[in-house]
Image (cartoon, rainbow, N blue to C red; front, top):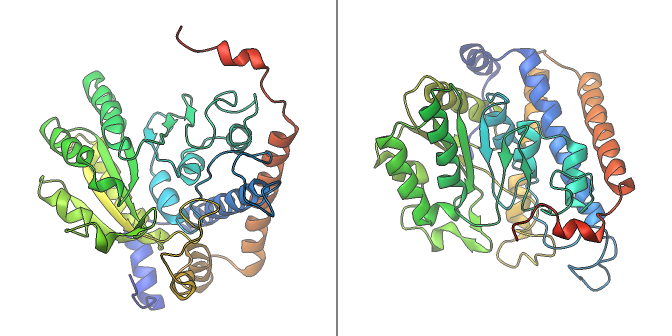
Length: 345
């Protein structure tokens, strides 16, 4: 993914051919700023009460926390092609996908804080989000998103609805048998399914070159006759172009596609991760490809935005996050009796 920045002429040709407008790219920039601000604010609140000795059960946000800082371009580049009836199934690292699908930031924050105003009345927490209105869900089960999204895609096809299902997963999850089984069924049944592999090179702490005989998932998918794309996951425009093709193909009834987006998470696998498996130098090299300032610079080169406009969008996003987190912090915890509501007995 270490490719040179395109010339201005090449950049203009790319965005024009893709049909990208200033309004679309500015909206994408604001959405990525929103996601980045949301996750960094959640990280700040997460560590309250957890120092000097890290205690996962302490503080206003309890349990594990998996953040996707650095991976915003993948979620936004795909999400901008989706409609409200489309379905998205995410992973244990779900916030960026949820926000890109349109899940309200205030209800998402409240669920992370375990409050009764959250998406699941505080019962799901950050790894078990569900929003029926926006057709978004996620799971802590690694590799589960593939068959779950395929189930939604099967329902759409069975009912003759022009909707698309998207499964997000990491390259580690793609090593599970669920990927192969889902690809096979999706091709046979021509399901309107788009699989997006966020290849951030580490499955927890295991480098992919130590665990994958075939390091690229798009090549695996080609073995099932699935149209596949390898994209720069740190480049919003690259992701957007591939997602446009894949989503339009699925919506038109031509079956599944797979997008492999090579990206990088700037924080550990989970908050509290010692990160002994990678060097600070490696992280800093990838920070040079940060998708948010990268898009900002392109907008300025194209003459579609200046520093004042970009600062205004950043500030708007940060203010929206501040309101969402304040809503979560001020919301009440569930009544103990909530433990008996909405369960099978």
